[in-house]
Amino acid sequence: MRKVMIAAAAIGVATTGWFVSAPVASAECVGPNTVIMGHGGGRCDHPSDQPDGSFVRCDTTYVFGFGGTNCYRVAAGTP
Image 1 (cartoon, rainbow, N blue to C red):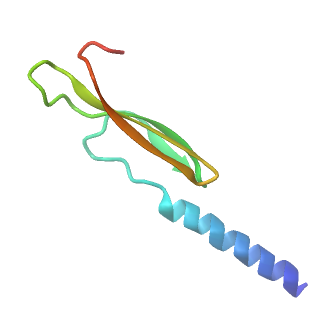
Image 2 (cartoon, rainbow, N blue to C red; image 1 turned 135 degrees about the vertical axis):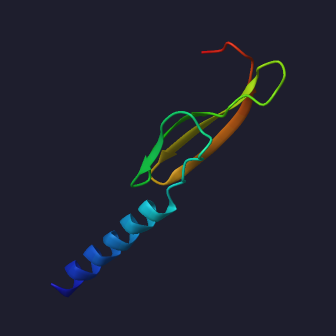
Image 3 (tube, rainbow, N blue to C red; image 1 turned 135 degrees about the horizontal axis):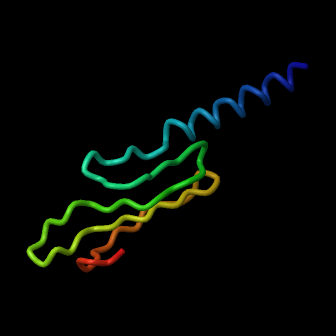
């Protein structure tokens, strides 16, 4: 019974770590970007800051707690 309790506690600690390590969406970000229990992601479009109307888009993907974010500049009018 003790081994079961230790295993359950270890799983609880790992799950809590995934909740805590989830990235926080930027206040200036437009669009959903959610990571729950180490899985998820989304697309984030930042407001335009260039005279030509281009903007920064960030794609985030996490599976089993592994992943990351890729940001790049997008031309104006891109869906």
